[in-house]
Length: 267
Image 1 (tube, rainbow, N blue to C red):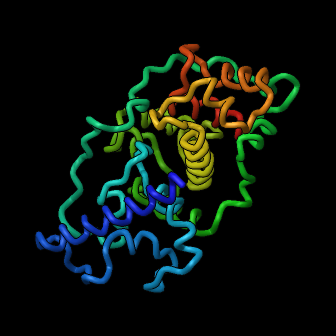
Image 2: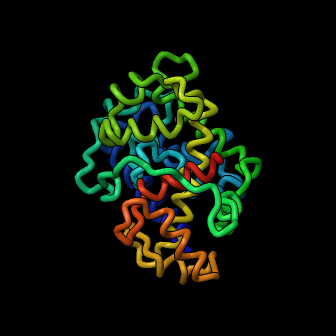
């Protein structure tokens, strides 16, 4: 329900943004019938939204969240092939971004591969994590499209210079963390496949985090994890929470949670 409401609000908001940009003379060459959000959701480019595209709208919109701050800007929805639309996007102001993004994290300790005799892969399934083969073609198309935003030399991979040094989203420290998590083979580059795998893992993990976060404060407690019911055994729920809570402050923030989740998903 939360994501349905979110989708409705996002669509309404970006329709308004599109109208405002056109009203200010920034909308050409886009015709009035094609606001930004429509172009974002019309994955197959047939100028209409199918039932499947509407069902996938939340996942589609979230896949455009290039800086992974749980918000969308008009610049993030701007299609890559229409760079002449409006002015050059300004560097985002993250004053009100997800507070967890700025969390200081210590080096990640050794990550367990099983908890109480249960593999971490099975634990992710308890949470509702899906197999990679279940990712929709629509989502994969979006990930491929977004990959190109940072691949400035079009060589099919992200270099540290492209992503970390020349990136404009988040902080250099955050971009470095995302890059390191994505670079699975540690060759100093993030290939298209590595980028897509990281987005699949990250986007799914963030959705699950949001579903468990009952009070919507962008933090998870052991009690919320237990009440959610995915891990019905209280002992197991507490052990899993403790494994995720690497700084042992009794709360899970997005970056902290994603670092361990990502290791589990790749194990």
